[in-house]
View (tube, rainbow, N blue to C red):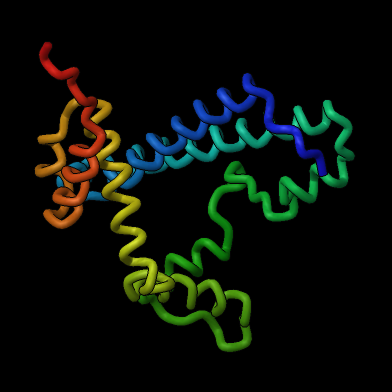
Length: 187
């Protein structure tokens, strides 16, 4: 593997794209909150797919550079994990429907359908406050960072109190406070 750093123009492009993804992810989280839930179906899907498409673009730019520098297509396919790729153009699949059924507590799939039961149990895990309870602190911190960053960038820190639960808003306010641009000291 090559030890040279990423070329600066590519690095800047990747940073820009990842920043866009982060803001889209924050919007997904924002539209899950009851205070702004009036249009949650449309907006969460728009922003989630925007984030996904933008990360795909970043991946493809990096892959194009790697290909340009001589990386084989087999290696690229391996690094890009193309076997994991799922197209959203086909719409929700049975596994997605089984997972939602598990989240909502609908009847179990037939006992002999092991694949359906596996996805159903994943959904049950989400319904029981997440798949891994030890991540709760990390999830709260991530959400607060995203909301605090967005509030600072939009210069709208006060909106945090009306859109989010108090514990998330309080932590997001702290994040936004740290992100304040320091003013030069008077001479």
